[in-house]
Image 1 (cartoon, protein in one colour):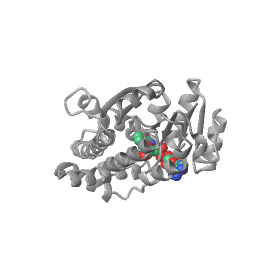
Image 2: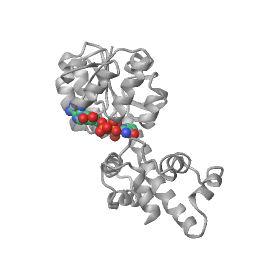
Image 3: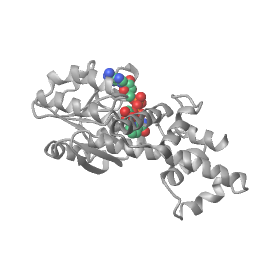
Length: 280
Ligand code: NAD
């Protein structure tokens, strides 16, 4: 039995993937509609976070405050030697604090932030960046592999979150940069549809041009399952980390300002920010 707390875009997709792989799952979310959706997917819907206690519990929560609240309720009920894999994107320092708190309770806490979105979770194709004990990772690895194409043990507690923040700072920067370069080409008479096939066969390509633009922007679908608010959160966490360690971010900082300055609301799909830069 695997426990999941947070059954939103990511946690819900992970739950359905684990069910499709024949795993027993028990889940909790504050939202009763998501608990009902979990039940419909064949999982046990728990009435409290404590109810999900199991040898492996996956967290998929919006911020460190929610992780702390869930751990307070969950830890007293977790079996000794259990592993908590926290796939939420949060501050590396918070992850280190949670690891120490879990350790004191005889439970291993791994920071295991993910890349790949709900589609990657549904297909078992996530990339997982792990910080924490190698032995705990080996205990969790067989089940995490049902969700992931790649699991990389980056280092000690917090290192997975550092990797995730560096990754998403690049996503935010690449998207803003691609939007500006494509706008320049468009105004010079060459549309994104005309130029992307050659950029994607040339050295200027990135996930922004290979994946985001064709899949979610040119198509007009804007249905990646990742919001502008979550991307702004990730960018703010990266800026705070850069400040903490004294690493200047002049290029990425300008991209971060474009995300903050956009009038696309937090609840909207994140690629709309790039579409706004292109059109603006
Ligand atoms: P989401 O808002 O869809 O889901 C979060 C869920 O957590 C919500 O359903 C909410 O009700 C629940 N929740 C909040 N506080 C809770 C609590 N105290 N107890 C129980 N449930 C609680 O968000 P998401 O898109 O699924 O993202 C989840 C995490 O994964 C975030 O940290 C995000 O940054 C990260 N992430 C998201 C994506 C993506 O593409 N959506 C990709 C990689 C990482």
